[in-house]
Length: 144
Image 1: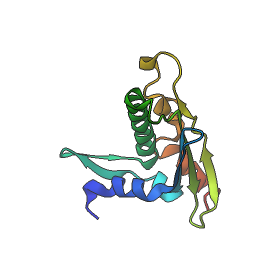
Image 2: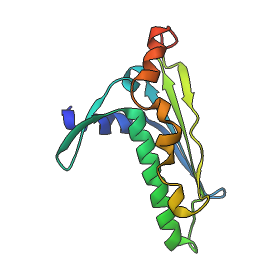
Image 3: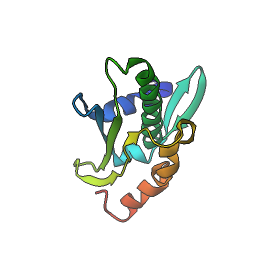
């Protein structure tokens, strides 16, 4: 796999479930991330800008992007359909696929003034970004 697309492939592989519940006007997503993948920086390139990033950060960024798109689309599709909430769960698993940690992702809904709620996932869940939090699972044996 080319270095510049590693992260994108890891992201796609981490999506283990997705559903839309029209009666509740909700999108639900489940991500399953291997602990060994959570501690490693993965190559990615957007418009030629080569960099590395972590899978949890990528998931949170894409959830925030999905939420911005949800809000935008709702403005123009109110009479046809509306999505009121995006729910996501992120499960980090060991090599036997036992859950070692579940990240408490808050539901993404409209709240407060529209310009004040952007990019809150990475701030709220900052401890899970990068390798440090996940390395402790390997050193204390929880990730085995």
